[in-house]
Length: 217
Length: 265
Image 1 (cartoon, rainbow over the protein chains, first blue to last red):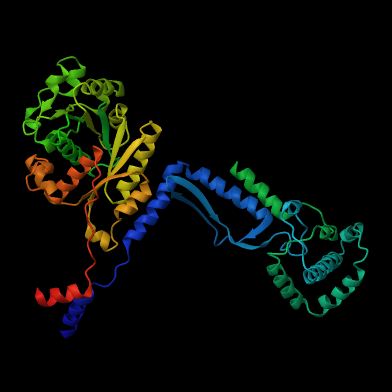
Image 2: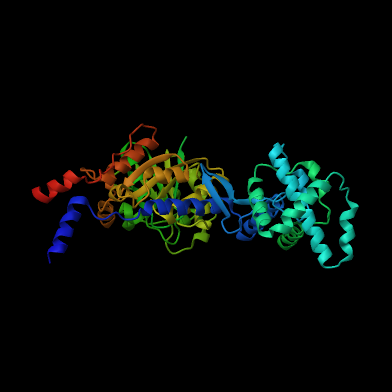
């Protein structure tokens, strides 16, 4: 009996418990709906644009698809499209060292790497080549000859070194690769690394982009 | 040169007709010669808010059909001789008149009146197109609610597309206590979303309903209500006077106020 009296007394003194502010909700909802109204773009076109933007960006970087956001915002009667595309990693280095460099990678920004980074990249690429080599041999495929087309001069020493590491602990190399590619967000591939990659076939990512393009157009 | 102003909102029920009646009356009180035109064919109400419903003989359609002269259709207000109403036809649809005909009517009115307020119907169809056909300026009436603001925004876009550049905003039915409690958009919120110049703010006021019951616009009262003052202010701003916005702010009840209330009653 006493508790309701006390609580109502408290409420009268301190005011009712804070409601969530619907004013913020209405402003947020209005901004979104007005951006769409003002643009007068039908949802299909918007979706098409969204997919094409994702496809283009995916050519260069790997996007975190779970948390990407597309929104239309409006200010002073001007509408802006805002795309928030969280990048997992740069595609050229993050290609999983076994995958070829996409032809588009050349167009991306290339910065000078530090000595330590170059060494790390060299080691990583050497390992990748070896892994690919081994994988192909395991299958007993005729394709084993393919890497031989590439000029491998000057890489033999590192190759041997990498070979040991690879054989001794497969798991540790995986983790090294992962961390190296995380760092790689700033250090993009140096151009001269390209010849080290044996397979120049069109990568998978490009194929999916092509598919998206045809679906949407 | 006469000013031809359309009162519009997109959404219905936000107070277009109330604003037209009060603004027209306030302007007439200030000595302007005012014609209010009901462009809501089929659902006319402006005559009711002005209390002129029993004096309608001819409508705008009769004028266009050549059955009477324009001055015969105009209902002159006896309380305020500067004000005249051009009634819409009640038994016809909005398609019964064309934008060109509306232009002809309004053009004729400009010979005598220096303010012509056109009360637009809700929506953005034919009735709306008729009502903006002759207008050079627009007053957007909205309430601080999501649907009203959205529709207002749409109408602002249509007005711009139809070359009506002088568009101003009246925010109707504001409830300051709700704004203070962050449960309603403030004047600033609405204005920044719509991004057009603010002409005035009308607080939510029960007296509006009382005045419509009587058919007597609020601005005619001797002792003006808060909404009546706000409408008068809007009419003064429309004539170029600098009138500050009414202070509608309500302070959040502080602890001390509550303590006083609790013990002082």
